[in-house]
Length: 575
Image 1 (cartoon, rainbow, N blue to C red):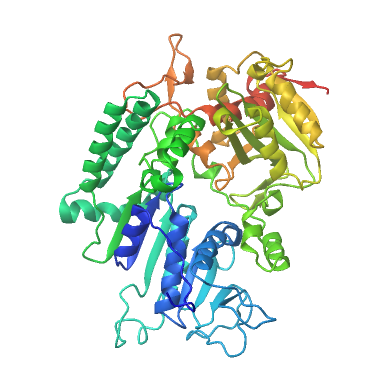
Image 2: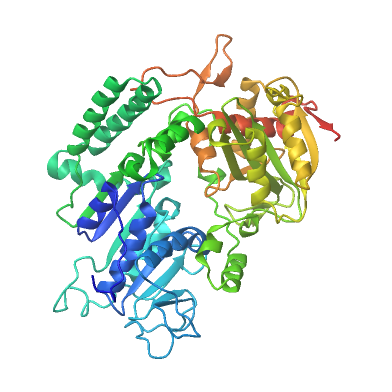
């Protein structure tokens, strides 16, 4: 081996290999969590830098904060593995600079740029230009576009503002050049599985599977997911023979939907954590199965394709969610102060959230369980992050974050770990006041302890320096029929006595999955209630994604139930 040659072995999983081997102009990558999506985003950037020197790749994101804290840290982690180094002003060595004018002697992009404020520029002149839908949405003429977390995009805005800029340098890289690059003026969209109707545009390109090869991709894929659930059950039951049979059947089915590029140069590809099993291990999958409700696990981990159910308990629509609230001015200052240290930018905290008012208390509610526990985080104000309007005479109730933990994942007690997660994320919150809306089931004493779940959690909050104010609702559990009527009144938004309910869609994904997939039914008395019946038939979509919905119900009923019932429904408990 030549001693002057640097080598590093990088092992690809099947999902990453499939993506990198197939040349396509437009790519739609729907991979679950833990599949290795970040790697191929970085690989896409690396390829563009190498094959289009002095070109421009746009990185289109919903917010600037999302780009700096989520996409770019993982992207440059891979680029550093490939040998890229940030430019050092002292030694005058390195391969790229971040959001500043490139050094003298470096090539510049063919497209003339008036400012490099939103650019990551490489020494060969290639530029990664950050576009965001909340501000800097119109960029220079570009040669390619990459969008990570594509389900967060406003597709109509993307088509109006970003897509038209993908038109530069035809005579250099395109069909007018001597050596045209196939992917020039293409797009790469990376996303986890869409779970709302507004995000389904990401699945539409897959129709070529059926049109060109009569492959019913989504039907076969969901059959595989359901088999993988049976595979997990076989593992839990230690049935090795059944495990092997199911495994072989999933392999057979997977071969029938081998990804391919369409005649017009489109690649649509699905993958789940099972494609990355060699790296994450089956034990990780098993732990996630235990910690998450079944539906969230199927969507987030196994990449199950689901439509919003009919007869939903919660009448949510786009008015009640899909706000993004990254504090981009703070994030930009933090990035510059740390010299765009990707590791520090990936360590997010509440200062990066525009919907967390540092001068107001934080509201929390728990849903305690013996195997898993959940936590909603909220704040109320008068600003609507969806419409960007003030409502001086009306409360806007924002669910701003979520946390959960499973007993098998922790060395300490589950209560302590859940509270510690909250305290760590909000450790810089100046107003150390937290309103705890008690889960009455949390008054049951912990095993081997003299304290209840609630008492342990409150003691832990106080230990971390928080002042705690407690609220509780009447009865053991809020009545489901009345809760249903309350939610109907809130989501209608016609009665100004009720708050406007909003959700941070970036932070509260599992809450939205839970609430949008909880069915309603009538009981024997003719009253409305959540459908919590466990489905034993694996061919039927599970209806047990209720944990986070239950969590939110308790706080909303405690705060606003008296409007519906015309009586006081919460008691202030002094600590």
